[in-house]
Image (cartoon, rainbow, N blue to C red; front, side, top):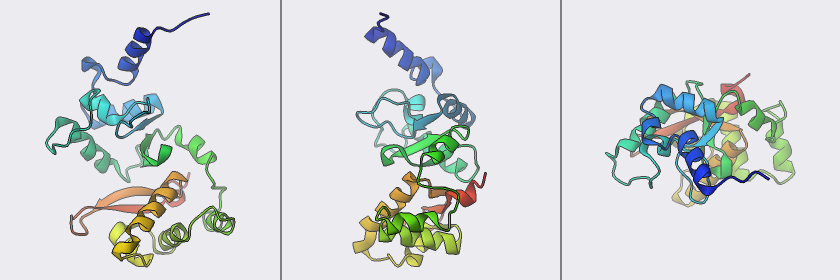
Length: 208
């Protein structure tokens, strides 16, 4: 029986996760190629999960830095610049964490979701079966009827503007992303921080 030593395994991860100093990513195009080569990666490293991440492939195998000027945070700009560009699929998917998926692999993920080719109807079936919350239904319908919108307008359209509704609104966004129903397609200069994600229906943004 072939046995893989811990050292060989570590060496393999160093290379395939681009953790070695000479293998670090230095441009957005390299980041896209890395995601395509791996198929799917996390944006941030996730504690307890051994999968490649964009952060580690740029900054090395170390904790995510708190300092805003850390060189590793260039990944944030890359990610934002590609929203809506259809170069990869970015949403909170695996374990409802920020995930980057190659467009070649994304259809396989989509095929495992609760979507069956009728965006105007599938979500209602889930809701009637108790597998979609009222908040998620309301957010989805707001995008279905109103088109792409940033989170500030989306909260208004979904009637969830109070502070009490923060948690329910955010949970709805995550649940809809994890089931490939909505996807981030841009960033708007809106809200107190002048930074708000723009969402659209996955089926509308990626019709193919």
